[in-house]
Image (tube, rainbow, N blue to C red; front, side, top):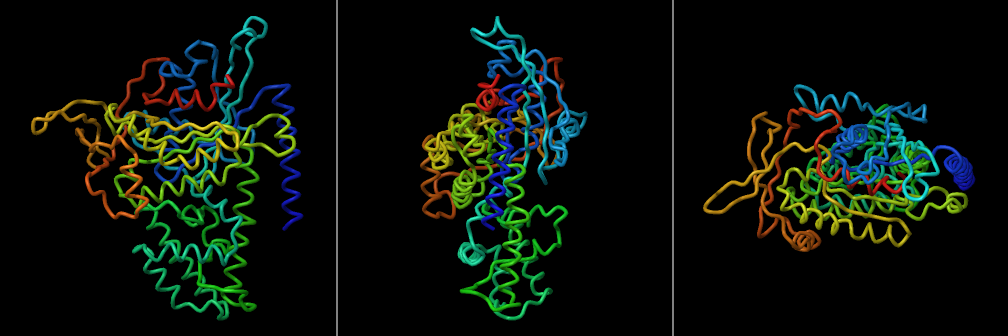
Length: 471
């Protein structure tokens, strides 16, 4: 294990040196990771970002676009031949076609390269010609990112922490009942192991639907071609000490370690360790609608996600000695178009408070962080409606379930985020003084003017933070 880790670090170091030399003397490459937990809008974010970088009429907040220094943008094959291409054309077609609909969500890692020809700014503008900057966008499920925390945990520690967490969750009752009847020291029997793994996977799926965010191991939710394999056939058990040979305990432990070495480590080595910039998308409105427990769970998940990053300055010597680090991290609350613009500042304050611990840790390590609210694709319009003598700021859109247009007032977010985070930290079951509603809107039919990408809210500001300094 030690020699394997040393070899991995050496290989990453050599690759990092090669990448640094290539970028310094040839065409710079910026790798941007896009992640978020289920239904946070990763696919829509990437599709709209690329479309708005190709047609930049709606990107005034991106300084290079506002100054007209981006002369051309074009898609080309991504450099990693073994990584699936992000299906940009199909996803954009789903969003902008005659009958628009939300595209399929992220199920695995994918990548897309967008190359930009940019004129330099400042004193160099008259001395140098345009240069090419390659933007490699890497899309991966946030559930896989949370798995990186497993690398530092033994099977026994993971089992104990997981079982303790499940005791208060109704959706875990079936699995807990099955685990209670299981004797870990008994001889391993494959049908029993499979029953435990299926029950645990069912719990993870139900927990995700109910709004819990600590649903690891992530591949149990998105197994892909690993479905049914031994590496996904384990579950937490009430174990102590070293289990007997050929016992269920020892087999579960072996498979847990195989999951870390054969699934989690390759993901870190092949994808995550190569990222320069990172955006974490957060469905904060969805968590608020589900209640205080979901908000607290999301706050903890954000801290865990940041714990998986390697934040810090990414100078050439740092990359040579320590490997590539993530030097900019953006936390973005999505679906801002579900609120009237008068509440966007409050949503931004909430995402800032939710990610405060994570952002402080990253900044201490030397990374730049930011938090904002955005909508990668604006699906609503705003209007004011009178109700019981009061003017309510509403949004109007096409309802996902019925396909009919409707105006919607979601409730008023508090000015002080502590009014949400306080009850969440205290373990409250419901909001005592407010009722926050959530509505699912379908994308609206679009008529795009040549040169304009899809309508959005603050996507240009997100792009400026993530890539503006390199343009």
